[in-house]
Length: 186
Image (cartoon, rainbow, N blue to C red; front, side, top):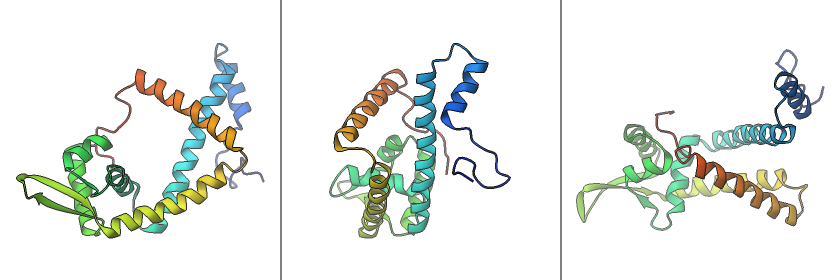
């Protein structure tokens, strides 16, 4: 049994060419090159999300917690943001962000304190334990990603990165509201 066939009794996913051929059969105007690219990107994204999700489970954190850790690391030292800023960056409602922060404070991944210079403002800060979880995740992801791209030369990796960046910019310019989630998915 091939990887494409899956486990016995499981619905089989068509290979890319067969799926594109089915689309052409039902919708002859479809551009097969476009469909192959889009279908491959969708499948790759889904499979990568599953692989990353498994790594997060192994480290004892959820994808939603990973998103917060990542957002705090990206802003740089001292790794602080207000809950409202975090919610906007992650495309979440304030209520969903509060729930997520509560959970992460309980796990020791972040702290939540009043800003001494503005007692109304709350600051969420990455803890040493949270930063270590982020580093552990990055180490596992680096191994997975290196394996994923092992068949591409450095030039091909650069070209692929450039092409995907152009596609991302196109989507971002035509669908500016598609970057985040506006509802609680936790």
